[in-house]
Length: 444
Image 1: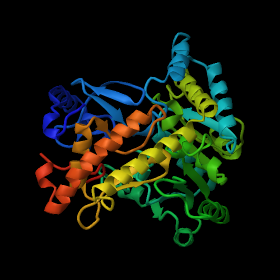
Image 2: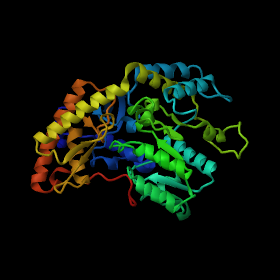
Image 3: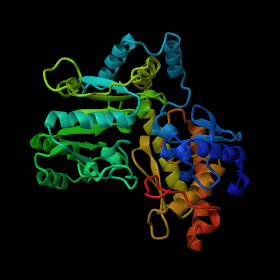
Image 4: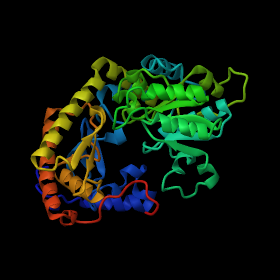
């Protein structure tokens, strides 16, 4: 696109498609983070197709895309090695009455890639894996409570987590009371929590790293706390898996959890997730132990051959092509460019890039340097007008130098408008509709 202003970006077919979506699908999307309420009014493109780092909407507009598939498509859309592996398995059948040999091959490949785990079981989505980890922890410890990191935005669609959010309708209060929270990076507060609920906490579950690096000694300290208080340490590696290292954050930082969950980048858009961990815990869901059986990830589609083939191709590609390092380099280049553009336009303290280079997000701050959905709306409108679809700045390895340069140019144009809004003390004149909304809110 070469439009200068959002008034020139018209999406009539996307608007019609969004109406059809809302008429038939609650929320108009199958993930709340993809909802049109997350985008400026009448500027929520509906995607036709993607290739590499680009997507096209049903109106024919092309965008450089970031955060592809909610961080799941880290190699770019329709990656040749992944598609070839999937196509090969599709022609051989995808689901049988007994395990396919692909299941053991995928398990061997995964455990070779994540050597800190001893057993693995595959599923289709991250929520099933994290909930399975919670169930295993409760079964192993005989304890009812789950302690989750309060500073991490999402763990599961299941009641034990969603009950802690503003969207807790339909979840019994008794369920909510079994989930408690601890702050990231604060070992003293976590120990106080474990002491307060001594003998009641089955597990500590957290993302080992997100938009900030773990403080020195923090993860090792959590490991020691979990051991001392007899609870299970669970790393949610849905995001950190592959983007931090092929073996996740546990491979990078050298702290081994009892259980960990992987997804997103594991399938490059295909539906596959994994629960991995210590043999004595994982085997409680198996047939070779003498204790009570745990119903662990028994799913009809959990081991579809083509998704497992995608996962194996992703792991091979990451290792052979040094993808994690490429993601880091691309992110560093993008972050430097965005920061320079924001500073040049006088909004360096208001458009802020955060996070590990392979997992960048941005904050949009108002005149008082507080997070603002209205300024986010302004920023997103200008990005969309310039052909950049970026709810975050999470990169894929399919981006090239031209994509990064184009993105930085569009950001600079957006920051020029941002400066005008700051000077006016109100971005309203540049919104052209309601502001974007947070995902977790009580009322629609």
